[in-house]
Length: 127
Image (cartoon, rainbow, N blue to C red; front, side, top):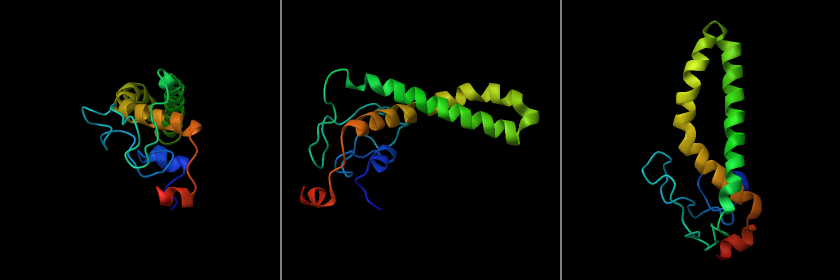
């Protein structure tokens, strides 16, 4: 599997340029330091904070993740648990609160991955 592609970096907390350095300080989205980012990639040195306010666009990415998740969650309830549709309403808020740190981190990685292209194999191997 090619480790320096955008999808891999978004899903596995990696630098979008090299696919090896960690994007966030901690591996887990469920720690007290879940929101602390590395300022630059520990492996290739890529700047992970290009400018002040850069990650405001990640709010829109996060919103998109929430909408997609809620639609999938709703359709699962409609097709498999229709007699228990009230449980959808009771469960959606706690589930979204539980997923907030995960979506926060994924949105930031996805937003940066839009603007930074992965390095080619030979360039990534030289770094």
